[in-house]
Length: 425
Image 1 (tube, rainbow, N blue to C red):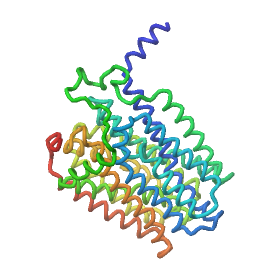
Image 2: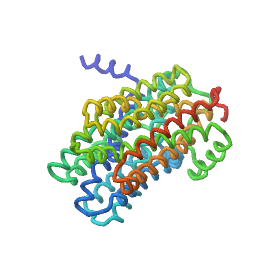
Image 3: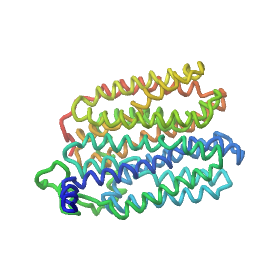
Image 4: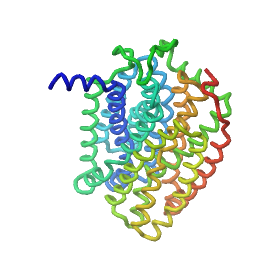
């Protein structure tokens, strides 16, 4: 009996175990990052901080974890994937512990803007790209889709639980729960994560022979590598189109919905747990939508996939204020399903186009720069949403403008010319 079990395990390629570890690591980091939406009102009530100041702290964190992407990618090349995941998860845990004891606004900015912002950089920017590129030859698009889905699913799935803890106990209880999950994930990474297939004597999934050019650990300066890749990328028109569209992607997802959706719902009298449940509902459908998007990116023109994703997302954001004004839970559920399917379905096609243009070796770092643009957009929306709320006493204009920008993004991506694989290698 034991021998049969052993044989069964040997048939499962270790790439899938690495994908599972990366999947749950991203989910935990996503929980840390997205919990900010649950904490805005409690921080206002306990400390008396202005919403603009709280939004600024979260905006800096969104921007820094995006900006860190290309440097995290370069550091992975230098020190290895496993060590970077260990360092990053430890940094997140340090930030969570410090949050429990903070009592000044500048401490919030330092902890959530810098410590947690940088700690989440590896998991929420380039990890999915590196695992897919290093561990998969076949099913690469599917792997990216699954890991990308984990980014938003992790950011949304446990929000109702956190909201219940905040409402019935304290926001510190919610921080404690996230801290426990982070510690469990750190132990799993230490025990089971591997850097490359070569480290355990296997080939990437779907590869039948060793490639002529091996993807080995680099010894170059990571800062030099990051900026060197950027210098090459800025000469390519498609880089700017991808970066501009991804700026709007970040603006319309984690920056606006992730940070302000719960507060927007509360302003219309919807309870915090119900609002958080809607976000969680989006996370479930995001897991489906983004995984399917990864599958589609292996089979169809990625430019047209992005065109429809952005166009439909824009329509849903314009619809949301009307749904809230009507006070209809049914309309909110429809929005949550529709928006959830499209939450970050844009990522697999964007990664695929980046890989087609820049090649497997360079696409990791260059995608890091593209993702930095994504997080710049997220930071603008995270701060801008709070700023516009203070001016208009409503988020309606912020969400309407985000919908209009999504239509603009759909025009950017359709201008990208269809590429042959690896034009810039």
